[in-house]
Length: 110
Image (cartoon, rainbow, N blue to C red; front, side, top):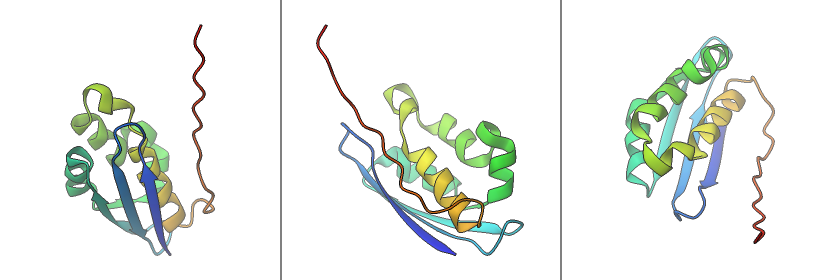
């Protein structure tokens, strides 16, 4: 299965497109990442192929999140893109349904 995910990361203004192609739970999914963010582009160099089942089993110790921790420092540590990559791999590997993710912000002065 092939899945494409468009991620608009927030106030940084960067956009990322993740394309993941998988052929099952036990096979690695190929990942292509296009972004106008240098750090996410660098992450894409290290996250090119992962097994979806391994990523789920290992969670934050999997390849995607481990590499994100190495590359995304400072305010970028809270970036939503790695979660989007993770979800794309899950769907491409047949481990999740293609359901949109939404984060909504509401600011109140106190």
